[in-house]
Image (cartoon, rainbow, N blue to C red):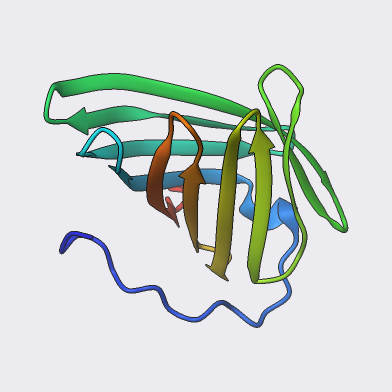
Amino acid sequence: MTSQHRSVAPPTHEPLQPADFVGLWQVRRRLVDHLGHETLGFAGQARIETASITETGEVHSSRGTLEAKRLYLLEMDAAGVDVRFAGGAHFVHLGLAPDQRVLHHCGDDLYEGRFIFRSRDCWIEFWRVSGPRKRYASLTRYERIPDPA
């Protein structure tokens, strides 16, 4: 963790709904690749709409900087949100709790995630990934970019 990252505060106790997160977000991610012995950073933005989340930005590593983009499909309802890969395959389900743990199996790889929703304007996402060809941890902070209107 760098000095740019703040400590993780306790989650919110206010009731949140998936639609509360629609908007534009600043994204900062740090990924520690234990197999590749490398730390990567991502800086960019995420646009959350009722049916998708699109992240765009740059990945920084010791080998240089690359443009990056990823898309997930969303199915929101009053009980939470189903997150799907761009091709439609299921990734995870998030309920309404302010602090949640999720699991996703992808072939031989296991993705263990934790989502901490601090407020309508900030959340933290942590992943630990393990498998025969992967072993990394990532920490992402999403902060809402205020609407200028």
